[in-house]
Amino acid sequence: MQGPIRRIIIAGGGTAGWMSAAALVVALPRDTDILLIESEDIGTIGVGEATIPTMRVFNQHIGVDEAEFIRATEATFKLGIEFVDWGHVGNRYFHGFGDFGAMHEGIKPHQIWRRLKAAGDTASLEDYSIATQLAYAGKFFPPNPDPRSPMHDYSYAFHFDASLYARYLRGHCEARGVKRRNARITGVNLNAESGFIESLALDDGSVEAADFFVDCTGFRALLIGGALGQGYTDWSHWLPVDSAWAVPSRSSGDMTPYTRSTARDAGWQWRIPLQHRTGNGHVYASALMTDDVARDVLLKNLDGEPLKDPMLIRFKTGHRNRFWDKNCICVGLSSGFLEPLESTSINFIQLGIIRLLELFPWRSCEAPLVEEYNMRTLESYERVRDFIILHYHLNQRADAELWRHAAAMSVPDDLAYKIALYRLRGEVVTRQYDHFAEPSWISIYNGQGLVPDMYDPLADRVPLDRMRTLMQQRRETVRGVVAKLPSHAEFIARHCASPNVMKAAT
Image (cartoon, rainbow, N blue to C red):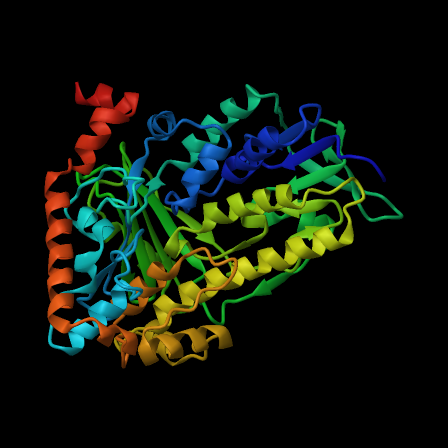
């Protein structure tokens, strides 16, 4: 089993399969044979049509032009996520993709805000976030790479149609040499001595062999779970939602540059605006709400006519015990599932395949590389798990069982430590393999109502009047920038409207 990997089979298509193929084909030696096997008879699950800013890096890595991608996938821009009724009923806050301004004499902006708050200032921390203010004004413009610009301290991601993205990537990959077979996998053949996967049996009687396999078969996990027997770690005691109804609706014309998450009695509802429609879903705990009631909640709260019948999705929050076993890795839903609250599903796909490239093995799949891959991936899952738990745990709602349970439950030790340190004096702890940087954690802490007891005492070295003047200038600068920029819809119409939307408008 020595020598380089010459042939890779990606089992399953959809977003996970074609993202994997796109990353591999640009990174591996040109004589590497890549085959993707998918069955058109098996549907894909697209609960996540929203992303985080790292999606831009992935598209650049695989050589995708951003404007072309936006037009092909009916995409819109995303500056962050609005949370409605999460901390308490009537609460509204924003997780923006950006900071709250630059540091001043080594003092972080949220510490300056906390000091001014202690002195009686009533400005919101969100007043200093240009991503937040752009989003609430319905505006969009790409950030300025010049760090001196007031338009520097933010980023953006996308909302897009996942099925259109998979179709777009298929064309992108096939033009670069990736082969595809439309077939159903009926069996997995293992080597009797090593336990490695040797080949896949297909429904037409043929067999496809390879040196390495990527399992993108969704929740079924045919290779990593079914053939290699890797079990599943259940995290539903921390995150008890286990079901979702999803449905597209006719666009209301309110093409917001952000995702909206609205808390409901047994979960939450998403709203994701695309150019041609709006994506909607209701994520809920089936132990606390029946499927019929959950479906009614979703349909009653749409802002446009549903375009098809809602689709019911069942899941178990958690992860595969090993993400790489023998000569197989799992990517996408076959590796695990964390609810789409912070739009991390596609980022897990991206990280899964990029990590493989970082630790790419020879045919023998050297054990230290396998163990390192599994360690990094597990830590990523744990970091996102804790970030999502944070949203639930820091709530003051007493009106429904889910929220009372979330507020009272014990949380993972590292998360409890992070919360305690922020509560003390606004210190933010981030770890290696976090998907979100310090400003994101601050957004959730602050939005959920956790105000630090104290501020950084070093902030007292700046005279209070000078600090007030500085922060007033920042607020005025943000307002001035936002006022001059085009609306989200105007920007798309000028630069990257999809052909279908342009045709419908004429």
